Image 1 (cartoon, rainbow over the protein chains, first blue to last red):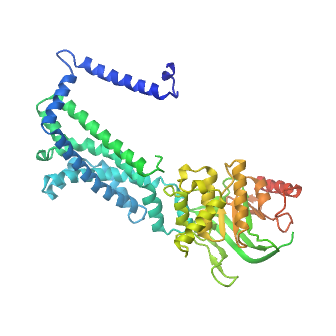
Image 2: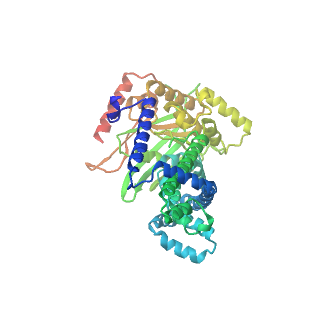
Length: 256
Length: 275
């Protein structure tokens, strides 16, 4: 047991479980202690559970569904755009465009929403496209990095087997890196999930977790706000787990 | 040992490769002919030795058409025509290439990789399946048939990479340091692979690089030493052939490793240290 304080020490499964449970206990205890008394920063667990029950009765599941739908609609469009640019970045003519798209991630969101508001009248479509524009820049950055990190030997290997350049692109970059694409989506999905509050506040009528947080925030209902934060975190972690599971399940060779 | 040299299989003339202002290799000239021995099928085994950084890998990339020569040309026998003298310039895919890491498609199983290597052959699906299964059996890869590269041992990866190239590229194969990092068992596997390749067709030609001079001398019938050449007492900054040893002409090719071979090892080491 004393080894748990030694750097680089290997520990068994039971000890790992014990450590994790210990930390959960510390967090819960800190929460209880910090929410005691009249003046406190965090709402008490009872307030959070009460907030959660209220949210459930107000249709929390429907709001989660709405957020997920928004999230997936945006990510599908964003990944298609990013994949096209990233794959075609191997063509010298397209490479500067792909790199420029990646650099646009430094552009502030406010500027983008202003022009999107002029172009798009439907608020739901507007929400999706704000996320798409925002996501595409990050996804393109990750995907370009994925393409650039493919070792030269893999291209040479395909060429030595008589593949023409388009076949090399298809076999090595497209087919050979599908599992990486899933991992890139998994990592970048966290950014979309984080952006929900901002984007969903554009159209409150469409609901969603972001709308619920904004609504709770307005009435300073801390119990609900923390309950929602926990729900958002759990749903995000679930998506992350499912994507990772799919990657490992579908692609046995994937050892990322 | 009696042999005759017949039509030219590999012709490299004034080959040089430069990246920008930096010349990596220059003035490389090689002529290798088909060696014919009575009573046996004899492919060619050519070793390229040299110290690190002298441009062996660049030479191999140029030889296999993976990099375009800055000057010069690489010609190989065109075995697709009826005439024995026809030659063609090398393009990528004409000469098989197995790199030091035995790179394979990471998303294809051994069987799928071999199927891919045969994709352009004019054979029926059944014939292709039969050929793949025969090779898998002969090369001890039957159990690895449905495994991905990440699930294979170094030796299995290497054998798969070699079979892929045999299926795809005809008579020529270049192997960049095929013995590096292998244990005695795997080294023996590669030696057996060389034997299988060279005994299966008269034109089959293996060109490999190695840092193990003893293995070069033991296996090759022609050895090229790449180093920095000296011109007018000044060492040049690019790699070139600094010595060629024709083991056939010396009468020690295809023989058990002995004292004569040791003498060649000593000579090669001296040349390598000087260049």
